[in-house]
Length: 277
Image (cartoon, rainbow, N blue to C red; front, side):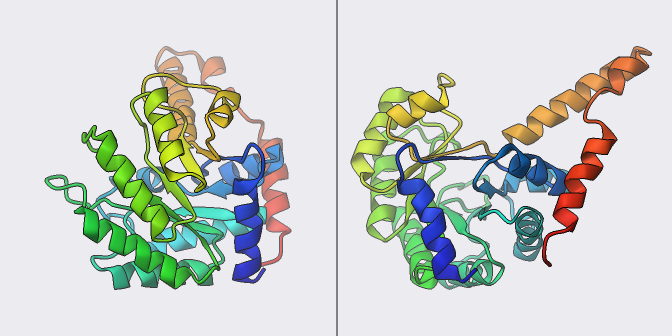
């Protein structure tokens, strides 16, 4: 599907009443499970990809090419629009971010996120002007072919400054970002303030505000247009693995070996294998 057509299709999910729930897959089988359940779009998770490779998230330990290959796999298997959780855009300069956006378009992605992070734990958030310039560069490179999400990680990085968060998100929207995103605002009041400040730009929320997990309906009522899960489906699955391991250590083979039947695994994989390459 040409980039502009895919852009329109993906943006329509954000602008309709209720928006969309966009879960994050971490491998081919998880993507197929989500597609089979009827989700209309999925996303990568930089944290989950890194974890599957035994690496840390947000430190540029996963390369742009590795992430692109992963996103291509999810799209090929499912035929769904895929949003790339592409950390800081994989590069030091706005020109690097533009190159990443161009590569994502060529890879057939429907969306791409650009964070204001640095990959440096000592100084995790970029200066305001630099962050805005990087989003502006991403938008210019997108040329209406891929949905650009401008994201600030203030709250994730221990910077509980709602005013600065709103300033950044507003500037990202003014720079042309199609969607804005600040993971884990402290509470519903902060979420309401963000949604109101950037309207009508769609807002993505990672699960909920930090203080309470809301329902999908409650988030929709708050005006949220996209709900993502980041690595949390992955960590849920890993929690089940850890529980099975504990059962195994206790000698309980029956409890340790429950789960998806392998005939179901093969059924899902056969669907993905039959998609055009």
